[in-house]
Image (cartoon, rainbow, N blue to C red; front, side, top):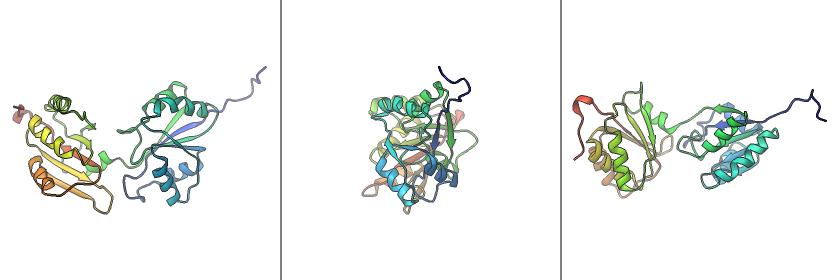
Length: 241
């Protein structure tokens, strides 16, 4: 027979933001959490292991990424229900923002497990703050479909949105993304941010066509890209041809 006076102890799931480049962009609270939890669930255990080692943090790591999220979620929920504390981290920035983790958070909430954010860096917010575009309201789009037909359809649906748009894209596809935006929305004011907080940090501002011209003149482009595009001015809406 169970003891009615015994209190069931359930663990806590911490969603921990980590730097997007510069390792010093980490909060003291985040470092403390990463030291104190029983387990760190990481998108890439090698990258997170290197980061933890930099701060002389020795902790258990378990992989948690888009390819094993469905399988790993029940396992982590079981550990949390057994009283373990877990920190969820992505490769860079705030977990779940275009990164895996939704299933885990959804399941944790369903099991009445405490989910606590440990806030920090987000590429979208960092870029927005220096874009020169209106910041009172904006739309985070993230990554969009890779296939051209779906991309154009997706962008056309966004063409009348009056608020600034924030896109994530790889350096391999950033040129085609800008080309598709021009054909779907017109040549709008924009800012391309790459390598933020790193040694070769760069911000290119101006019309998308100007940014395209600058990037095309280079032999290549490195670093994840954040592209911010001005919203549609209702009086100047340009219908795609």
